[in-house]
Image 1 (cartoon, helix red, strand yellow):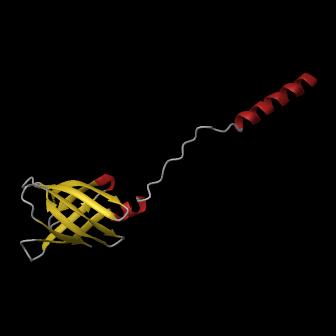
Image 2 (image 1 turned 90 degrees about the vertical axis):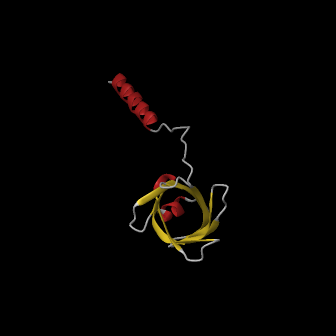
Length: 136
């Protein structure tokens, strides 16, 4: 009986120590400080842009997607171009290509969480037309 008690005690202590084993190399994932703002910027944004040569504002809209993708939309919310975007702190940047012309554009500006984007745009070509834009 004494051997049985010693064996049972050894088994229980082994189970206890195995169950309490701690992992030494546990990695804690880094948090993206802009994650909250990035989720706020996702969605459809509608606004206008102006140029240095045209004073009347023109319709301007993005569908900003998770993962850094965006669509340029027309007034019917149909995709007419595509590109990428980034947000660092409140600084918004995007590059996109218009499907019909294959012209490349860049926009940069500020994200005023949660309701407004605004800034400057320009062609990514030798012809350097540029202007201002905003979206709500």
